[in-house]
Each structure stands twice: as structure tokens, then as C-alpha cells.
Image (tube, rainbow, N blue to C red; front, side, top):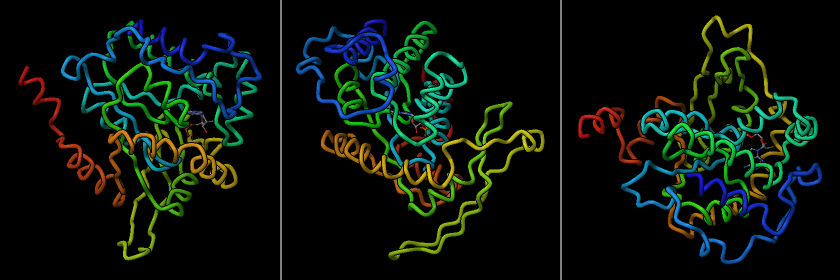
Length: 288
Ligand code: AMP
């Protein structure tokens, strides 16, 4: 994947400066993606035939829909890394590096950071994985703009894009109930959702996802999970990320999945539509 990480870097920096400056931190409309880049690319492992590598999947969906939860469960089942660009951004913030203050300002307002920054963070993560011999991935929170989708499309094959969907009122409740343990880093949710069905849809019940007692006193709320910022993130999703759904719909890669409820109802249904079962990995091992 060395070729891949080099190419990702060159795709995003070509025609602009290679170094990231503060002025490129915030996301702005860009038009300069180099035409015909894909045609000039050297073959990379990510372009290998599907049978020679692990899955390369993307999870799309509004903030709070549960991309992290389902992507992480699937990554364990399929034995591929779960790469969440939101986590990469939060790691960068926690590092108190030179960009962290400026990044915090953008993230805490619910805005997107620039395509350059996010591709740089993803490239670094892929390089680390490559050194450890990783193959395949499930991306969560990337791509979030059509330009990001074009960049990734230019350097690697995405096999499948799962688009998770949930009513906006439920999404808001879920975001406001979200908590993270500041010691173990696990995500929990204190919201108990009991929403009346709309437009002929059944009622929706989602029990809280409570932490074990040792995490309870260490729970923190993300700075971008306030009502005002969550609503801003929904607007940005509709503006910048809905076109990404369309991008993959046109490629015939988009799998729409309406979450029927909480994890106990949704997980088995998701496995069913993906033609997977809980014992997928055991079966792969037995067949090897
Ligand atoms: P998330 O945890 O996915 O909600 O991401 C948290 C924040 O990180 C977002 O609100 C953005 O500010 C930033 N971020 C994560 N992924 C991306 C991306 N692909 N493009 C731009 N900004 C991103």
C-alpha cells in the first residue's frame, strides 16, 4: 500500500502546496481535482483483484446514526481495520500539535475540516496500517464531500458503501445522549428512545447503551454534541454529504439500510442484507 499512500498524498496536494497551512484547515469548495489522475495511477494493492485482498467498504450516514457502532462490529467480524476519520481528527486535537487549536475551533462548530487535512490524516493512518501488514478496511466518516469521494476513487476500489438511515428527531436524541469514557475510550448512550411511528412506519424503541459501573464517573460529552452544533452538523451533512450518496448510487455501490431500532434488532438485519453471519470469521478460518 506504499504506492497507495503516496498517490493519496499526491492526489490531494497536486496543483497546491504539499504542506498543510492554517488557511487550508477549513473546508472550502474546491474545483481543482486533477483530471485523468486515475488513468495515471500505478497498480497498488488497493487495486488488486477482490479475491486477493480484504473488503474495502465505506459507511455513510448522518451524525449519530451509529456508523461507528456497526462499522466496528463488522470490522471485528471481517478481520479488517475500522478507520473513523472523526477519531483521527480527535487524536490530532488531543496531541496539542500546532494545528490542534485551529482544528478544535472548526470541529467544535460542527464544520468540516478541509479535504487536504483529512486526506493527510487518512494517508498517515493507512501508512501505519501498511507497516503492520493490514489489508482492507471499513471507512467511517470518509468520504464526506464529493471531492473526497473522487480522490479515493482515483486511487483505490471501494467495493461497497453502506448508507445507514434514521429519522432526524431520533438522530438528535441519540447525539445528545452520547457519552464517551475518558479512560477506556468506549462510546455509550444514555438516551432511551421511544418514538411514535411516522408515515406508516412502526414505533421505534432504542434502549440506552449504559456503561459498566467503572466507566460511569468518567463519562464525557463530545464538545460537538450540543443541540446547536448537532443541528449545524445535520445541515452540513445535507449540503456536503448527500451528494456523496448520489455519487455512489450512480456507481451502483450504495446499499441503503433503514435502521429498524436499536442494536439487537438492527445488527442481525444488517448481517442478513450483507449475506454475513455472526460466525463468518470462524467459517473463513475453517475453510483456509
Ligand atoms: P465524526 O466523529 O465522524 O462526527 O467527526 C467529527 C468531526 O471531525 C466532524 O464534525 C468534522 O469536523 C471532522 N471530520 C471527520 N471526518 C471528516 C471528513 N471526512 N471531512 C471533513 N471533516 C471531517
